[in-house]
Length: 475
Ligand SMILES: *Cc1c(COP(=O)(O)O)cnc(C)c1O
Picture 1 (cartoon, rainbow, N blue to C red):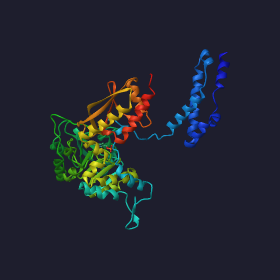
Picture 2 (spheres, helix red, strand yellow):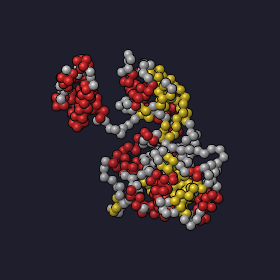
Picture 3 (tube, rainbow, N blue to C red):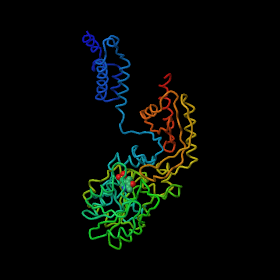
Picture 4 (cartoon, rainbow, N blue to C red):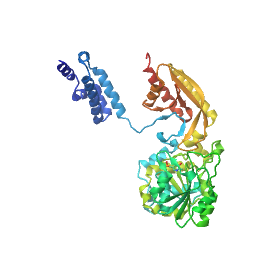
């Protein structure tokens, strides 16, 4: 009878307690929490049980359990479950500010300062001079005003929060005038009209998608106008028959009617990228100098720091924002502040900033350096990996993070074509390697862009490729 035959097989399944007594599992328990080990054992046992249920009579007869394989599989599952979900990956995509991979990566040089704050009590809200309560913003305010020329500054969790806080403070229940050409949507559902609605400000759209004139703004001004808003179209460009009103003209208009002018420049930078042969993004200093009353920007886009929203501008407005209850809700923690202060300090010397802040380094990397990196990686891979063909080809890297959408930075790609593995499977295995390697696929090749790969990751890539392709021999 099938039933009794299967019953017999079910009795072959090892018990959880017996497996826990196995030498190898006992060793595992020294490294991994018991709760994870037991969970993995249960999963494997359930898997075997489900397999048995599906067996037919004949298969049941031949069924065996390989104890050694079972224990090894359990060990592997435990190792996988016992690593951090949030962990390092190798970005071989060439997208410098990769939103899904964490946007800006931080400078090695700030490690000690940041850890010092993180692992100790700190001056977060304590004024050493007076011995009294201080404010958490004071640590970065001075340096931000020094770098930007603004009267005052503050920091919240991200630029989306910054825009919301600004609009809520300046224009709640009032109207905000914005050009139809600047109703931006940034990835991750940040939409200017939605933020506006959330803040309780009423959006007044003026002009058309491609052209807005200063008279459009002026005609819309009335008793109810709370602010004039200019938004940097970070992630798209309107080309051809277009007109955007320069900040200066909006500022003049704001002065004439005594209405504050707010500029959301999105990817805020302190550096004129055109000096390095790249597209010129508006700098924060220019907006401040241009007379904007309030300027907002992100900390983890072109600035190359932590996720943060930085607000600079006239002191009276910043003061009002600090009193807004949203400020408490959007408050940054000490880790953010430590990373931000340490990163901003690097900007006191632009040469230092460009050399030490990875985002800036990757964006301004010379083609000679790219060629040299590509050579090194190519030679290493060619020397130690056999069952693949490698090529060096020309390609383009992207800035990413909704910045400089038209910029195409020339780069060198290492293209890899495994001999005995489909390209999709290969890419998937790279992704699932213990240090995930995130790469692009083009036709039947995997492409690695050396611009975003650190030199100390070359060896990890070589080890990963060996590991993946070794298991494929004879397939
Ligand atoms: C990126 C961006 C934002 C959102 O900034 P986050 O820091 O991601 O919240 C807002 N406005 C503009 C113009 C942007 O480019």
